[in-house]
Length: 295
Length: 345
Image (cartoon, rainbow over all chains, first blue to last red; front, side, top):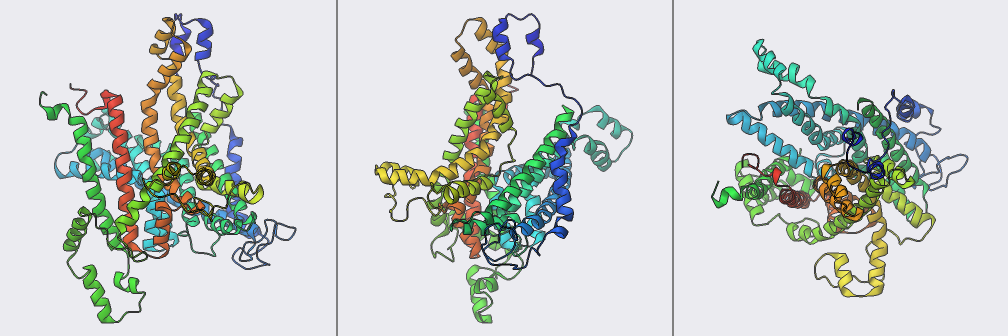
């Protein structure tokens, strides 16, 4: 916001000026560490939760479709598996797969962004390939993630590796675009020329001079990437191309529960949905706090 | 710079890029489908055919030809809009897909419209009445972008309004089971229903669409607000606004002018949001049984109908790229500084 000019003696009437200034700007103090508690608890749950659950999450342990009660806290699903145990156990699957995918797409996005960005203006084949890469990334970003996921998982089979691959591909575009934009800004700076004049090889300029100075946006976007990976993973599970059952996974559980919801049984779908929303919100909360500190 | 081409280069160049992008994407799709491990002929027959039958199927699919010939045939067929025959419906994939595009597009556009209205009202409240409680709520809500997955909201809507309160209809279609849909005139189901003028039919169609559209617009309005609120804030303090105030313009005029100047950035965001919205519509369609591309794609996946999946992928990309083209051209029309060669002109 450009409040600077308003505070100097401008011709805007005082009363109007106050109304125009927007929300009061808060003074940014130190990191509010308590906003990281939900995300921290979640990681803890993913780490130790599967050892503490009362039932084996992949076993049939009771009468199907029991409402929540003393024995089965979240009820049982239509196969007779314990919903509570499955929701907790799925935290590990969902978080781990999405985390690997988010790290993978960030690393790959940085490499693609740096290589593409540095060769953008090159003559001949190299420049042509770099510019085509940028266009390809743009098209990839345009295709709905769900559609890419549906097609790829059904073609290559629903394994952990395929799903991680799909999640990497769908979040790759955004990450590499952010890095590429930054590389285009940085590559003309004098310190890059200085490195060249000092005799650094082009590949070293690319990866030791330009790369560290252009990866910040992709790190800032990491929590959004992580959240998106969790959502897409669960949406694929919901559409029936997630990790094969009976692996506990929130999306697949929501799909099973939604089928049961037609018989007015709410618990099978409600608990994994709540878990998913809490997870994504906690990550967004932690991420926005990390970002806020900088500005 | 006097020739007609140079004058119109900004939109001609953008227009020419579309077929090129589609062409490249089609080639990528071709190779991805061929990357699939296993023999397509064996997969199609589920391993129950004899060696001669397999050979016949390979011949029929052209799998015995060299790869480059296969690619040529594939691209030529695409040009003729021949996407092959769906193995489940037995019909041409292209007509299957294209007849479902309007359904998905209609749902997407209705959700985007509702999201835009919600985002505009809340952003205006947040910026023009900064100390009201609504402003605080609006700002908090705009930070929820990405933290409210559309399909979670859809499930929650079903659980609350269908399972617990029992006010919503079962999420199993666009109309009550005993009703027949309106005669198809435009292929856009809601539009056709409205055109039929049948009150009961319209009411039923609307009640079936309320939950999915609400879920989608609640999920996507924050993305628009995230762009709109800072944009409005910047414009509220811009010299143009102060000029209007100084020259005694009405506050209504001022609001209109602030919105008009904040619009181009929001247009770009809503264009790129449409891709995600179509993805959201695909999930909503299979969640609420609405038909459309989403259910078709999910069916194709569950029956391993590769021809149909390939067709869905290419058509959706074509639709998304077309939307991007329209958005790009609109932005170029609104803001001539973005045009190619504008800086030198």
